[in-house]
Amino acid sequence: MRGTRTGLSINQEMETMMDKLSIPRSMGRATRAGLAPVFAGALLLLAACTSVPPAPAQQLAVSTAAVEQAVSAGAPELAPTEYRAAREKLDRAQAAMTTRDYAQAQMLAEQAQADAQLAITKTRAAKAQKAAASLEEDSRVLREEINRKAR
Image (tube, rainbow, N blue to C red; front, side, top):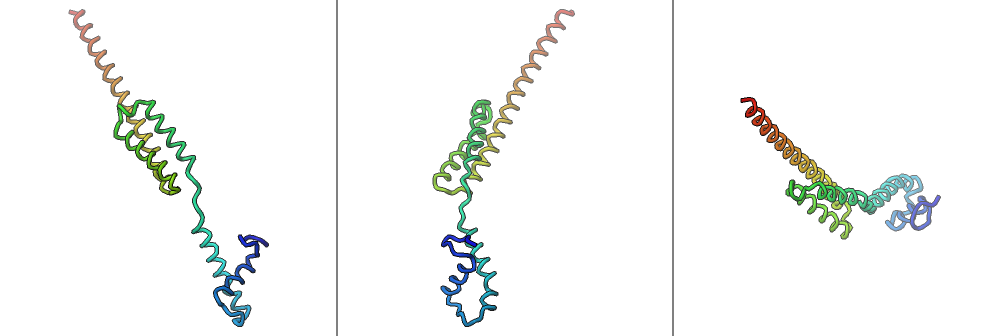
């Protein structure tokens, strides 16, 4: 059974580890075998701690697209605060990627996406309010015209 970097079986790897830690062979096989689960757990914990999370390239791409969509929707003019927050967080996420701080990059990219979506939503709401105000004004003018002709 091969499963370690050295090519040794897990049992051989644990025996080597116990020898390096100066656990005497005279303790008996049963005692040494009782320590095997402890060392196996330690090996797994060490492997988990040293693994690097994958780069959040997909989230960064989604966030970039969301920020671009916010620009297309008109967010820089109609929701500048939210757009600016999205842009800044996206820039910081890209900087975190270059320093291989993938956890920070992932978090910032997710926040940038949320801010961009908020900017898009606020932009659409602002456009809808402008359209509603324009319709109200058109309606008011039309009512005045009807009232003037009715007299």
